[in-house]
Image (cartoon, rainbow, N blue to C red; front, side, top):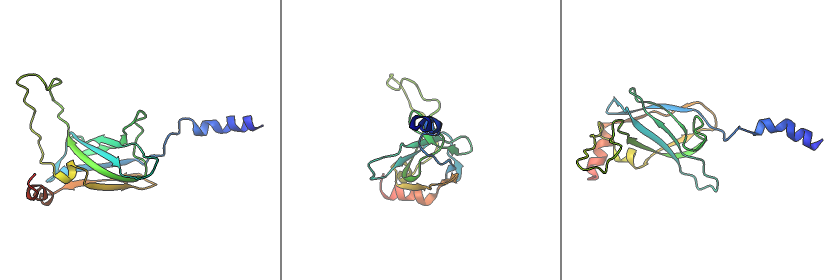
Length: 149
């Protein structure tokens, strides 16, 4: 009887994976959409069980959609506290940056330090979907300049 009950409940546990919340949003720099900007949510928990990071890539309108940065690539992010990192990914990068004469393409945005170094925080709630928009302003850039970086 126990085995029959276990077999009956098994489909509910297989393939369910972690609970994720759909997270979408836009990223802009001085009102310019952050095309090709990687948005990465890194968990900041002190818990023994750390959820996987979540990441997404902004399109031409600055829109991104997160997915887990693990082998499942499940849509969304797990509920919790995150530090958020932003970096530009060159879609035309040379596959061999070590070659002689390589010149990287210039970054089309000034990305503030707080965006590059995870000083932006976001809480993914336990229910959703949720919108996480990030709009960086002149004030954010001035903070970077004042710090001399």
